[in-house]
Every structure is written in C-alpha cells, then in structure tokens.
Image (cartoon, rainbow, N blue to C red; front, side, top):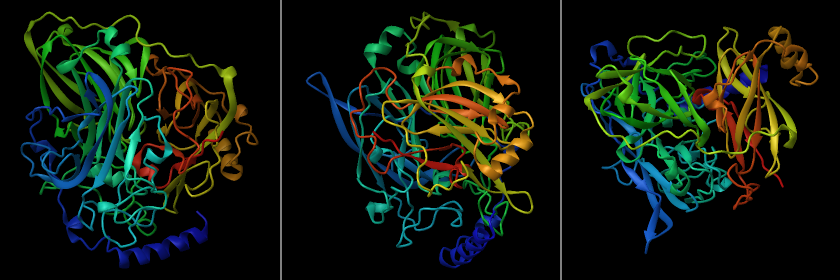
Length: 579
C-alpha cells in the first residue's frame, strides 16, 4: 500500500471515530456468543416465505403491476430457544416483513414496478460498520443508506441498484447516482431464479447480515409447463445463509478488524456457525415420498456450501443461477458459492430411510480454510413419510435449449485480474480488480448485443465468486498457473497479462467445469492461482431481440466479487455498456 494511502486512511479513521462514534456502543465489545452446541437442531419448521405476485390479471389477461415493498427494523426469531433478534426486513408492512423477504413471482414479458421504501428510522446501524472503506454516508448523518439490486436481472441501469444510488428513510438523503423512486423490472429474459438484496456502497455486507434479501422468480408457463417438473407445494425456494448470535439474540459481527490501525472494523470474511434456511436455524420439513423441486440460493456473505444428503439421495440439476440447463444432470453433492443459485429436483421416493439431513462439507474460507464443525456441517432435516404415492411430475430428458457458446462470435478479449493487498502484519487491507479502485473510470466497455471472452486471473489464495451485472456467461475452462509467484510478481508490477506472458504460465492442470454448471450463469467460482476463461454475452440468450431499454444509460452496471466483505472493500468495478 502506498504511504499516502495509509496516511489518508489514518486521517479518515480519526475523523470517523469522532464523527460517527463507530465504537461508542460498548455492548459490541462486551457481547458473548451463543454456545451453539446447546441449541437443539431441527426443532423449527421450515417457513414458506410470503409470496407476492408481480403482475395482475385483468379480464383474464396478465398486466404489469406496481406495488411497494418496505424495509423495516423489527424483531425476528431465528430459533425456538434464541431470544428474538433485531433485524432489517423486507415486507409490505412491518407486521408482515420477514427474513428473508417475500418471494416475488414475476411473469415473463410482463413488467413489475416496485417502489422500494426505506422505513428504517434508526440513525445507528444494528451492526458495526467501517467508515474507512468507501461507504455510503448520509450527509445529515441520519438514516441507514440502502438500495436494492435484483441479482440476475437483465434490465435498465436506472433500476439496477447501483451502489451509489442509495437512499435513506423517505428518500430524505440520496446517493450521487440516485435517479428514481420506483424501479422497473421488465422481465423479458429467460425464465429462472433471481434474488434481490441490498447493494449500498460499503454497507452491503452489514445490510445483508441484518436481513435485507429475498427471492424473485420469473416464470414462463408456456415454456416451463410442458417440462412437467414438480410445482405448487412441491416447488420450494430455500434461502441459505450463516449467522452468529450473541446470548441476547442479536446478530453478532466482530467489531474489531484484522488491521485495526488501518480498518477498525473491516474483516476479510464473515462466518457464523448457525446455518439459517428461510429464516430459521437448522429447520425441518416433512416431505412425501415423491419428487420435490428446490431452488437453493446461497445468500451468505462469504461461506461456500458443499451440499450433500447424509443418506445418499441424489440431486437432479435442472438449472443454475437464472437459466435452465439443456438437460438434467445428476450428482451426489453440489458446491455453491456465495450468491450462486442451484435449481434441483430431489426424489424422496428413492430414500431407504425415513429421514435425511442436508449437510455441508465446504471449508471456510474456501478452499483452504477450516474444516466444518458440528454446527455448520448441518443445514436442515427432511422427515420422509412412510407411504408411497402417485407422483405425476417428472424430470424430462431435455429441458430448455439455449445457444451454445460460440468463440468465433467474440468481439473482444479481456483480462480481469484479482488482487489482494496486505499490511505489514500480512493481513488483508483491501482487494481490487485490475488493480483499480471502484472510483477509477470504467475500463470494461462492451458493446450492447455483443459477446466477449474474459480471462479472469485469480492471484489470491481465495476462491472468488465473480458476478457480472446484466451479462450472462458460459465457463469454458479453468487452468492453474505454473510458477505462480513469478507470474504474480510480474502482474503486481505491470498489471498487464499480455506483457507478463500469461500463456507462458497458464499451463498447469485444467479443472473440468461440472456438468451442471456448463450452462449460462451470472456468477461463478474463480479458482485461486488459476485463470478462468468465460464467454460473456451482453444480449438475451433466449431470443435475438434487442434490449427494450437503453443499457448505455447512467449509472451503468458493475461486476464484482460476491464475497460481500470483498465487494465492500473494494473488489468491484464499473461496467459501462456502449453502442
């Protein structure tokens, strides 16, 4: 880190401590963590989150719908034996607000208009935050900045939830790129799974930890109906994340950073040992001996999950992120990075036991961190009824076919390098993409309607799930670096993959892309010390139609690591679409 940068950070820190009183709340330092081994697992029923229809039907014809969803501070019970936690929750009212928020069900081709309303009265966040990283701060010092991003949406920049388009209660204070109160989601893309969450600059990790997230589904009955997949009560969304709790029930986040003289609070990754599904810790669900569809969203800040069933049941993959696969793929386990979505069918009639635990075996941080323990190795339990029943649902041999990646159509090849910077005590201070802060002018400027090849170079020891707003991509291959330290030294000096002769170093082992992840995705796990080649499409995959909106409008889009602690500091770059 440059000396002038350190000096500036010290100045910012001093002023921040005086102005914001970040650590004036002594309770953060005095909190005691819940001993999770004393909490009984599988005692709470799995909630089915409230559903909101994103369209209305007039005389039998679906029409666009406009409605409001608020953000509220309220109490939420994560476990039967835990005191209620203070959270921030989405809902149509404070009484009905939930964690996660309501599942919005949209219809392909019919626009949904949502006025996201910040109803959080507090002037102090319920979690410790760090003003020494680039952070949204209200000029009045009142209110909690929030803004909503619909993850996986193909839509207008003004409704993308830009990190600087934040706003406080009643839009009293607004960020520099804020432009509208009501967001328009045109829902013209392929059917699939999305999710919405806060995206405020520097506060994404704490606002999501507080509860600001929820599922969004785009349905196309004409295309999906003939598939015959499980539907209705047998089609469930599972929003999974991890949390730690204090003995008073409050969500716990370490108030002291790993480099407290530089960043008093920021930590490179947040982990909690309680695994939450649909707002309950280690819930249970009674199922019939038949097929169920589960749309599983990893809404954790930094935790990867390697899901498997303890009784050997299979997952039959039908989709990944926001798109269907071309054909189903079976597996015994699934590695799901933060923000990834896996869409699977599980046939409980194949079970030889009357219960099955959905378990986890992913190290944290992934891939070289601590092994799982008794608490975070369990996700939820399924009680399977004894008698069999007629099941008319099916998994067809073919699902939905989209164009295969065509390398000859690529108009540009780019290199995206991931860097982590450390202090004198060898602790991370910040992370950059292409060695540039977020504020630097956009260097990725694809043309609307084109396809590009991106070579994502991971020079760190962590696996980073890279998320690209607007675009969809196919992962082509992953190749380990040889003489990685030599290549890293060159990249640190020149930040130029071509000048550093990347082809000379990218000659190591190739990692096969799992069959269930070979379709179109919007986020993928970038292996450490390797280059991942992806084909990115800035156009629809289900049709040749042009965007119905202007993708070149301000404030543009972004791409970033979806480990939220990394994204906040400051592993995010602008993405500017041109004509």
